[in-house]
Length: 414
Image: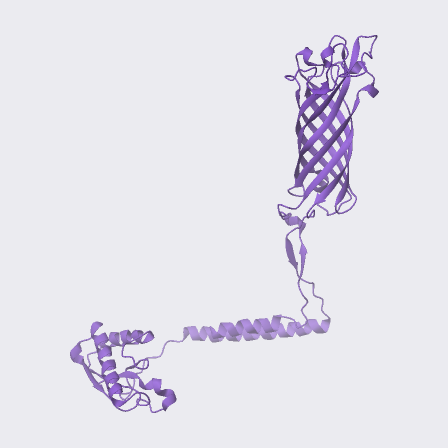
């Protein structure tokens, strides 16, 4: 392990240049974009404009009499640079014409203006309802996301549910107040529609966008009054201008990637690096050769300990007679040796003479040697092969600072 650590340190020393530049970190859009917090990327937009309604009889009225106002108010959120949702309320006034006999659909204060020699009369209804859209940012899809791009083209699809209000009053002139339902008919005055559009967004600042909304609706409209008794799908193109206010963070961040600097060296620096690399390779080969020789070297034959040296020494904490911790591993190993040898052993109990008194130390010596003998017997060593004694002297005589070396039991072969 020491040689491997030395090899690692050597490589670091030789391969790390002294004038290393710092690594820089940049965003990598190719990996996509990270989701923002839920409270970010919200917006509120308000739009107003006009629409042109097409129902079965509307072509009999001039276009200027069929253009009505329209307004929307939305709250929305972008969930990614491409996808978003918005929901809100809307108002639209549907204006057109119907045949003269359908008085229930008039809703027009200044009737009886007529068209086509009296065959058709004008109509006007007010729709109030709820609207929702799914938004898709075409600019970010085709050209990639760019924060604070001045222009974004957004395609959307959605649906609406509206409640119809018309003027009520006696026929043939409907000049009463606006009321839900055409002439009190509330069963046929809930209209549903689907729509799609192109939203042109121009960034005015980090918080405000100018909107140009080109939208086309298919309205399931009871177009010519309750008396007609049927519904048709009718076209309703409209053009709106608005403003959007962005709430919270509006930008998107890509994952960060580390960029290592490109190194350029002079010829002298290149020669120096080559020399250092060759020197490092030579030292690596030397270390590999030394490691190979160590692995191939056969273990030397064990040499028996001199007769005057103990087979093992078991150490004890101060004022303790029980075998603790790693010393139990020593006793277990000695027991294995004893079971493989046909010899007797002398166990000697020791205590330091720098602490306690003679009575206490004698008790400790006897207790320690008795504990070691008991442990060895419990491991399968015959008690007849174990002789015990105590010694009143010091085991090492290294002084009070080394007294812990004198609190022991030594085991000798006889």
